[in-house]
Amino acid sequence: MAELAVLYDRIRPDEKMLFEALDALGTPYDKVYVPHLKLTFDDAGAAAVPWRVAIERCVSQTRGHAVTRALEGFGVQVINPGHVIELCGDKLATNARLHAAGLPTPRTGVSFDGDAALEQIESLGYPLVLKPTVGSWGRMVSRLNDRDAAEAVIEHKEVLGGPQHGVFYVQELVNKPGRDIRAFVIGGECIGAIYRTSEHWITNTARGATASNCEVTPELADLAVRSAAAVDGRIVAIDLVEDPQRRGGWGGLLVIEINHTMEFKNSVSTTGVDIPRRMGEYAIGLLEKAPAGQAV
Image 1 (cartoon, helix red, strand yellow):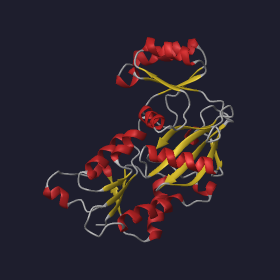
Image 2: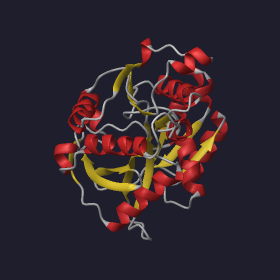
Image 3: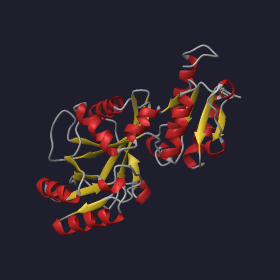
Image 4: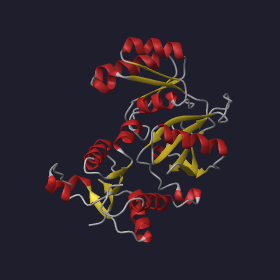
């Protein structure tokens, strides 16, 4: 068995591209299908874990976080670590960390009761976006243009019930130029970025947005790298929007969220950057930092 592993629960185009990049790099690695993985916390279980570095690529955030935390118990350095998954997998936690680091985000509020949420929404002003704190691909994101829309969405969340619907996370709807930006950061370097353009207000390629190359300006690179550092991200994608009404050290750029298991299949040909190869090189570099047989 190899000292490098790729952890996955579904093989998407992104994982195929990563496998091809690692094959080309020539470093042995194991493809670990996480649903079939069994780990036991004893000496025999430790002996059955040969990896020193692993790249976590699970589609299921819950599964990816669980296997990461388990392997960290055996001294495996997982990219990204468990605490990064916890931060990036929760939009509220991400925003709180960005705020603490002094980095720009849209005006954001959180409340924990329907009546309090409506009061806060009215105070922040319309239009707003209400988001689940955990989720991806623009699912269950609601645009609130007025009080009627706010009351309807709040009522739906209260009727649905459950702990996740008891948190009301809202952000201002930024008047962006019909696009957002995804910047890729690996090992503290912004290696490329794309625009995601759509006629819909949700600019996500999973929802039909088209990708085009975005020049990595000094402002964009600096903000992307600082955002990754704020959550201790090793391989992450930073989603940003441009606000023409704002000025400041980053030229009106605002950070929306950070993705810990980033998708890149639409970005390699667009940017001209071999993102999966750069991911593989970073992981192999971690292996080379420690002698064989020792945890990184």
